[in-house]
Length: 230
Figure (cartoon, rainbow, N blue to C red):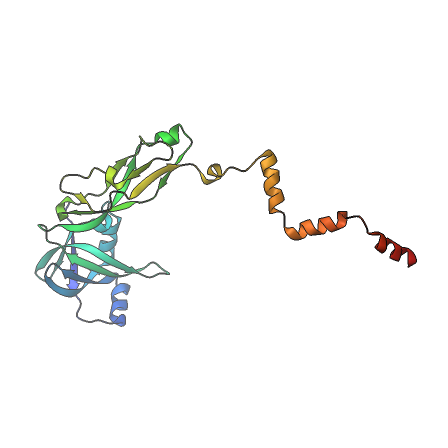
């Protein structure tokens, strides 16, 4: 489905002008790249949010219409307020449909590992996105990774991904995506019996040991005579 958002050229700049735009439900934006000039625009906030909430998110291809132009574009960057999370500014990039580009694509896990079902492990999802290169029209929404074959202490790496035709994975093939491992409390076992006593003895502070030794030491004869004289 093709998405088209309407935009307007921004004739005025500055903080006050941007505040007025935001109060009217619009967001200051800029479009650049693709061999063209950088142009300041204003777009509807709801249109940007709709794109971000779509299945392809920031990798969504859409058209930007302003004046008499209609450009293919993608979201390049976003600026949000760190406190309120309000959308403050949007960077758009012109897209040439016949030129490859680099984007990050999410990894989706499929199946339940043997190491979880039968060996008491859990899935540690380490790397959730990989970088790919392809034509704009070939950008996948996600890359599926079947992890059902993994046993305990086994990992799946970027090399295990099977991208669709026309998509090249740029991430290091050795990048670990998923690891099946034991829970931390199970991986570190507490010592039992004599080993536990030895650990406790070793961990006892020297000051306490010294005080205990002094209490248990028999009273010397000289000190006993002095007490009798008193």
